[in-house]
Image 1: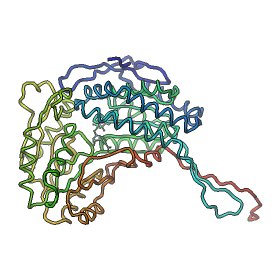
Image 2: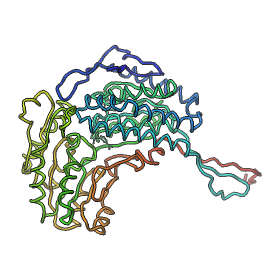
Image 3: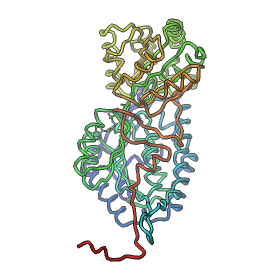
Image 4: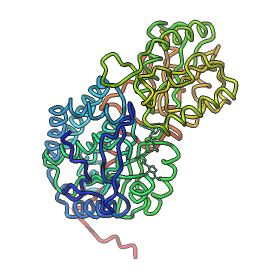
Length: 490
Ligand code: NAD
């Protein structure tokens, strides 16, 4: 591997100031795949100082938007050039299948391309002024220095949702990837350097949330924090960010309902219900882990799911026939195991799974069997809490209104789905569903043009789409009086 495996601060590849390093582990076999610098508050302060200077000197924010767009487009091209290397690196680091990682890389290049196109289309607008002989206009300016903190499940995809709009709009930034999965983010910083992003504009600090992340969130020289991760961390960041009333963009978790009506296309709904959860071993913020199934088809639907789940092929993400890889870490698998134990204690019925696989080939990896609980009710913590693993809870309903009520009974509001061939019914449901994304007869589809984010405690703000640009801009109203006269009030 040709990776620099260093931090990138002020245009230089550097080790941690402390000299500390952290081993990066392959979740499939626990082999050490890299040792990367373990930065801390000191490295973060150096990166913030570089980003502050690069923003305040105006070199990047005053670069014509078309030129910034061209650099962002070049990053997309370089990602496409190095797609296979990036995909394999992502799979090595996360355990997900290479096929899925290849899809991620296409999506990531698409995100950079999308924001490259938008870079010079945010010139503002003239608005009607109530005063004769005046000009009133609204312009959009970069927010300034952005701290960007990403999770481990879709390391580079989540990074791209933040890097591309921030660069396109003229901000400077410090990115902190998850300490567990930094490898593809390091590689993309190499590509950003190659694409011509000037020194100091994009900085990369590696290390823990409690040090690097906390410094970014509380440092008064950071103007915005864009965070994707868990709800508990999100709340801590909100508190820390109050130090200088930073702008906040939070993409937190989800406990996403998937409503299946009896009149849906049965086979497709079964297939997509599985796809909506077990992709990347359920470690997806938008996984449809709360199945809400109409009573008349409930038993048949669950049997069909169970039959399919029993045939899943678990294995190395590098094997072509693998459908599901391992969980990300020993700690994370322990959390999923605790969650399943809780479900059993709460009285849910384990329909399938509920343990580690016995296959001797999988014993060195952090594998967990795909698991389905039935007889679930909304008062159970397994129906309320995010497992972030390969676990489905199934609830039953009789009436349309009951289905929507169950779907909305959550502190989260990230995404949800409705399966039915009765389109007016689907429209009635989605109108009442309190989530940032709702799919009708689909699940988990997203693309760069459509905004992504959560209602309720799933977050604040939106990434992707045109709204993704708005997160990274401040709006300024400029009023010019062309014929100033005394007011004669005082
Ligand atoms: P996490 O909250 O543990 O960590 C996310 C990031 O925050 C990591 O980089 C971590 O180092 C950092 N961090 C930890 N403590 C911090 C602190 N005190 N201050 C600042 N930063 C800190 O989440 P995770 O386990 O990496 O990821 C899983 C979670 O992410 C799930 O809850 C999932 O739903 C959520 N997620 C949400 C979306 C979305 O789009 N809404 C997308 C992906 C993941």
